[in-house]
Image 1 (cartoon, rainbow, N blue to C red):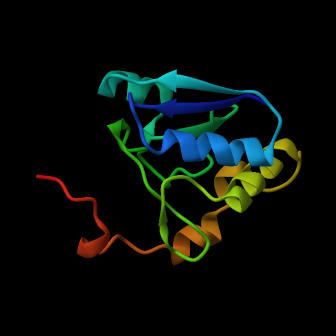
Image 2 (image 1 turned 180 degrees about the horizontal axis):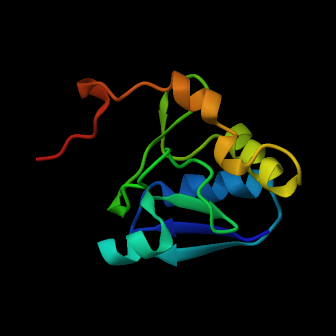
Length: 128
């Protein structure tokens, strides 16, 4: 199994992603710095950080990845905004990808996604 984390330079959410992955698996994790929107589209980065398991983003929304050099936020099991998927979410994605004949990694969080709600104005990152 190939685990790769795509990220932008100085991404504050890279460390939490890597720490949580280390709690879940002892598999090697590679990182790839993405510097342009073209690279983001080529590699499938839907914001930084993006985890790819064997080239597939298990947390991708259906349809267009919205690839680009930007930040990415996740929602945990309670719907709270998080810098990276929770340990349980990562474990579920890796387990699904490693188990032949089970739910595809892309479908692991489908129920969770249907409960996820859009960020309200108060939760959106402040930008000028």
